[in-house]
Structure formats: C-alpha cells, structure tokens
Image 1 (cartoon, rainbow, N blue to C red):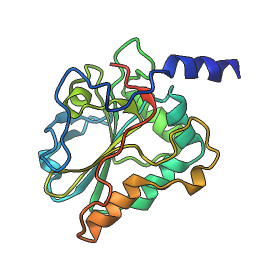
Image 2 (cartoon, rainbow, N blue to C red):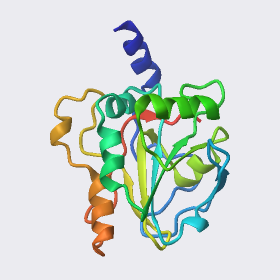
Image 3 (cartoon, rainbow, N blue to C red):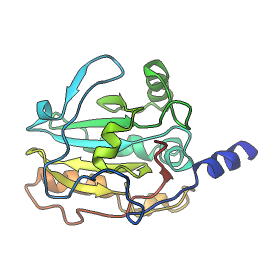
Length: 203
C-alpha cells in the first residue's frame, strides 16, 4: 500500500489541456508531427514510412498508477487486441527523461512489454522529449490516432474513466477503439478530441 501511495504521489500532476507544453502541440485534423527513431529492437521507424496505415501512439510510464490501472487490469492489452490488424501500427512512446519516473533503456522497456503481455507493434524511447513535445503529450497515458493520410484523427484520453482505480472500467467508453473503428469504416471520428488524464509526462 505504501509503495502504491508513494507512486501515486510521485505521479501527481494530473493535467489537462490548460497546462500546455513549451512547444507546439499536434493539431487535430492536421498532419501529425513527423518523427524518425529506432524502436527498442533497433528497427528504424518513421511516420512517413507508415503512410497508408492507421497509427496509434500511446504515451506510457510504467511507474504511473494510471498506466498500471490499464495494464494490471488488462484494459490496454484488450485495446491493443481490439484494434490489431495489418492496417494498424501501435507505437508505445516513453518520454521519461533519464533520472525521472518511468525512464528505462531498451532492454528494460522490452521486459515491461513481456511482463505485461502487451502487444505494441513498436516501443520508442524518447528521453530527450523531442517527440513528446512535438505532439504536446501531457499525460501517461495520452493517446493519438493518426489516419492513413498521416493526419491526427483523435487525441486525448484512452477512455472516459479518469480515475487511478479500475472500478467501473468495464463500462468506460474507449475512445481509441471507437476512433479506429470509425476510420476503418470510412467515417469521420465522432469524438476527435478529449482531455487526457493521468500522470504528467516526466520530461
């Protein structure tokens, strides 16, 4: 209990759109900020190279109670499974700076994925915060869905259950699953933007 309480206190800094980062954020309906990086298996990843696919970006921090809620209860894994397909690429981004909560190296990140039985397509380490700041990622989790043309189709919370506990999570509306489903059906995303919730990204 004490460990979880300390993690929660360290994670506090629950933020919303009112607390903007220093750099420009991604704008819904416009081109997603380009990035180029190696994933944790040393595979080169560029956003331009993913044109023609739906891209889900998940900002994560294994020490954050809100992230742990979604992984310990299996909700993030269920979300990954629900949107999985040849037309979707899921990228987990870790923007924690060295020395800050959630910072890991590639080996550590891959162990977290294995321990969580998660299924991201790639994990990208962003300790300088360059990618996170370009997108205006504020919380962990903070979700972005990019359409096949490379435009931001959705950004914000994973769902409408902004609590660190998982009570009632089964009844939450999952905005990521809804956005991907609507894009697959050729429809406009009905809820293109929500306020993200969780721990502040540890830039």
